[in-house]
Length: 319
Image (cartoon, rainbow, N blue to C red; front, top):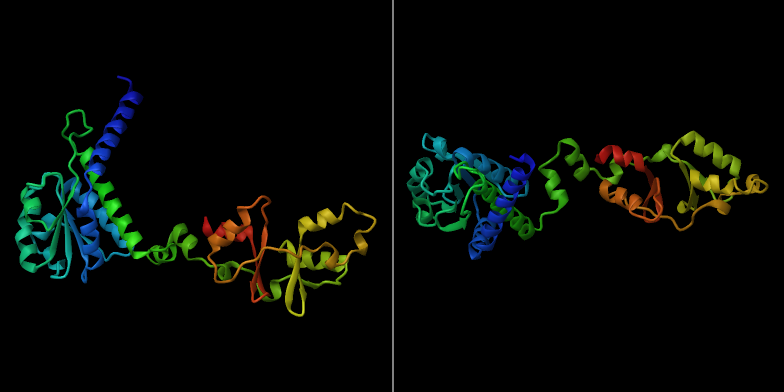
């Protein structure tokens, strides 16, 4: 057996089955999304076994993108966990066969409570399918397993259907990165999404500031002392230019005139800047996505200098 070719064949089978499930999507996904959008309670995802594992992932994705969602193992639901289900809730029950004992056994209680029931099943005519208000068809023609037994294509289809539902809801809610960040405050992802320019910029006495008629030797002393890689040129409290280490190196090409230069002679008057309330990732993109990258970025408020952010400060906070 050629292991590489066989593994690729498994991919091909799962991709083909996913396409078949994709092509069966109809109004039921739209109706389900609208039910969730109008839900006054929460979404409860339930299932057992492999379906339960996929259900946990779907619940986590929904919860992290603005939908109040919990996971309930169907077997545990039979022994008291059904208490998490309320009358205004929506239950998404996952069972490929639609006849899993644990899932089917909690249907009467869900109905009695009054919650809406959405089925994710490959068998519309199953007990689960018949009892549901809407059906998301995850039915596949075959599993990728060589015995056509182990859940492979079916679990993949279930997870992708969950991703599709969550992504539709993201669009409907106009969910933005800053909203996503609220649910992911920890780790590098949280830092990248939550951090604003004002959180990483240098300000106050840390800033290197000169006037337009400041001599080159004083510019060098100020730049060296502040260690920010740039000095900002102000006039009447307004920023009119910036001088970076690169500008100093370029000015040195004219050695005879170098020590006669003043700030106004070598400063960049048409400079890029950003606001303090902008996201740190926006500042990083502004500095990197250009023909010639810049390493420092002034932070202005109504043309007044309030800070300076360096590219390596941004890299440290968003990576």
